[in-house]
Length: 129
Image (cartoon, rainbow, N blue to C red; front, side):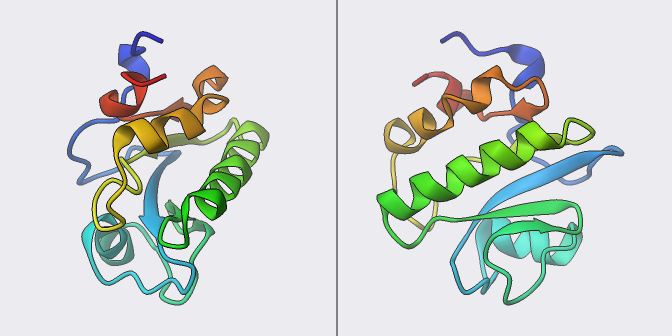
């Protein structure tokens, strides 16, 4: 699938517009100690000890518990995003940093999100859809 440029997550997110949600990779324990998780904790209302779901202006997807668990968490996110068109979700390249997965493993998990007009995906995920 070709990237939809108006639905491609910026490479660097430091601020959010009204209604935007920062989607980041976490661990199930919600220990947001590094990477995008730490940034979400410090800037977008992520909560220490909460490993999944909406928190402030961020949404955590646990990435450290294996690919099968990650796929289920992505499915829960996609369902949530579909139920909340009032938000615009900016998905970061979850799982492709500290968790150590490749975009070719994670991007296809977001295939159903590609149909949602309120979900932006990284260019690297669009490239593998």
